[in-house]
Length: 358
Ligand SMILES: *Cc1c(COP(=O)(O)O)cnc(C)c1O
Image (cartoon, rainbow, N blue to C red; front, side, top):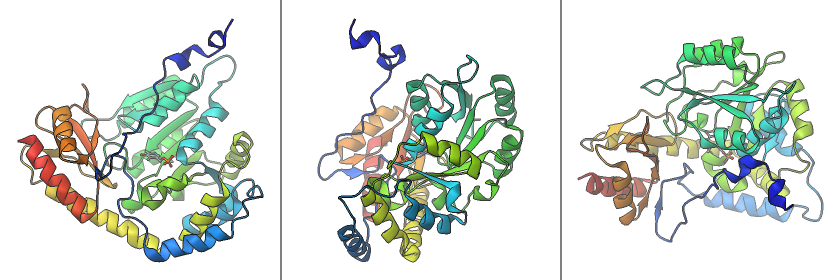
């Protein structure tokens, strides 16, 4: 016997998540980060907060000081919030709590496709069965098909990224509301990009319902802190809290995020800058001949190149501009996802793209 005889067989078939290996000078528009670094004032605030972190002690076990600050921002109570090491860990906590199934039946998780890859990758890692329902040709929800899949498959969870990654559009709020009302599992609206859309489903979170909103600080400027959250009914949050590993969010991230959230005006200004950069990028992409540009409510834009998406991606990379190549047979054939950059980066991106599609 070796450990290989014990490892779950599914693990052998999993793929490692491999981000691009960046080189200096590259224009990085591949990961939907905030392209604007933090301002000097924020750096000083962080330095002050960092010097007071009690590194020799464990942090508060559930990140309560940060939950309190986020509760103010989202107008909910701290007992409606569970924190994760990025919202990736929130997905992991949900899948851990629900993933083993009940009464010998494997647990299922439903999501529309194409969407955020972690929904499926994390399910496969836990032996959960993904139930994938294709979006329509405008990348909107197919309400009838989702309702039917919910009835037929009885998934424990349903995840909807709104705005959706990689398509950029948000989903119709009324459709989400109707689907959630009839659903017998935990309904999650993943709002990693909602700050750029000016819309949120947070008002649907209430006691006695299963509607949850997943949040992330990654796309609004704090990707390196790895902070995500789930906002949900207190009884569900209390159960999930038992599955969460103690001290999952570290003291440095908690302290820095609290310092940064203490000045919401600067945060809102950054969000407005990113939104303006995306609008500018989107408008100028429409002038590139032959390119199909999908409307975006996020901090990135999905485009479809007239020919050979992979070739366009490689020629852009050769000019020093990295975007995300999504091209594969199916609904994303010849599609690239481009994160909104600073004005200079958007300029470089458009120049590289124009040269690459010629
Ligand atoms: C980027 C992204 C996240 C955020 O993940 P973190 O772990 O919080 O960095 C969550 N959902 C979607 C759809 C995303 O694109």
